[in-house]
Length: 176
Image (tube, rainbow, N blue to C red; front, side, top):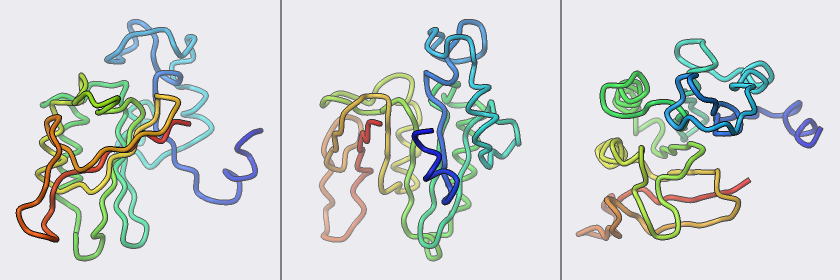
């Protein structure tokens, strides 16, 4: 009931996290018991996202809204090089028309950076994709507080050589 007033009147995009998916031997990369055995079924049934496979369990997708391209990852599933999710990110980022959608936001549940440390496992393996495709902002949840970084790559602040040049993604934990 807490989100009904919002989710019934405007688009409400979700990204699966540990409380939706984590359960031993279900294919999640973390393998905890945070979902209580629901394994994402409640979220997958209530919130149908535009996943490329149309399989809500594989909860990664992207949308465009005006000048914004939003890519959402499923932080509970394998995202390392060669995984379905990683390959999909690469193709999604390649397809972005930065003239039409100059702003690109990447989002997921578990954070890549937290409390001045990172990139955290298992997400450090695709941080180079965020740099290569000049992702502007990365939004994260999981941690129940708010934090933001300077533009950062491989754990270090990035300052562009020339004013106006791309530097690196800014990472924000937006809690819940």
